[in-house]
Image 1 (cartoon, one colour):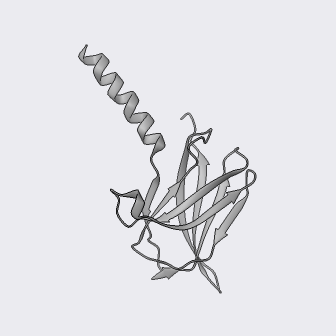
Image 2 (cartoon, one colour; image 1 turned 90 degrees about the vertical axis):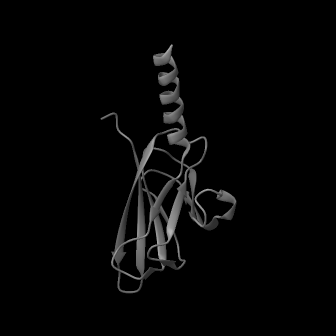
Image 3 (cartoon, one colour; image 1 turned 180 degrees about the vertical axis):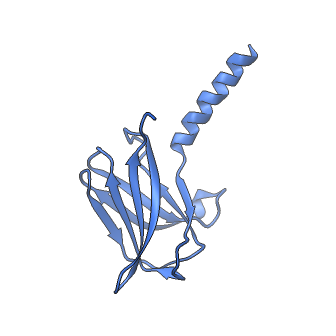
Length: 127
């Protein structure tokens, strides 16, 4: 009985983990960035991603939307020009009905006219 209970907790934990947003603290070399770019490196088409400033990790109603990103096809990208300071917390929300498990990676780019935070969305592999 104990094992069954632990298995059920594990299954519920996995499902909750999939529903969580991706949260990260802005790093990199710059004191601030003026662009956030999302790149779809999945096989999924036609979905939207929301990026928010995390003001209180325990209360999503206090989050401020930084941008809504429309991704039409694999390899597509979208960006939003807004100032984001280093050490701010950002959250990436995927659609509730998204069909694939994903992972995220973040890189910081220093271009001549702007500094960008680039968020890569990739499908989680079996391995």
